[in-house]
Image 1 (cartoon, one colour):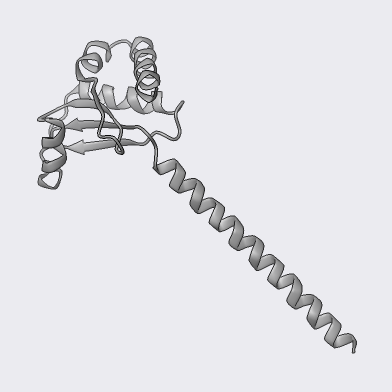
Image 2 (image 1 turned 135 degrees about the horizontal axis):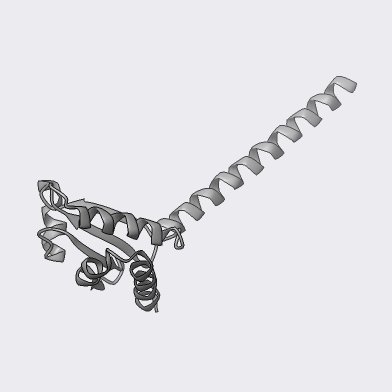
Length: 137
């Protein structure tokens, strides 16, 4: 009789543990999907041979986006044929920086801003944050 009770208890505990783990995994999947389905993306286009300013724009953009962990950053090489359609969609032939809403198709070209401010870290980061906040509204 005692062996049956012990077995029943072990089976019950195992079922509770499996249910809890499954629930946590489902929540994690939903959270990661919500993170990816952001209203905004930041896309930097570049050519195969990158200048110092292009690399600085990338570094400052990534640093700024640390304040926005749900906004993905994509680096796209316009010289790679597999990116031709996306580069054409944004009319990017070299270094370019965009804010993009994948659901609505809304774009904001920040290329001039990025080149003009790449030499001033504070101004670049402050300006990019301002543009992101405006774009999200």
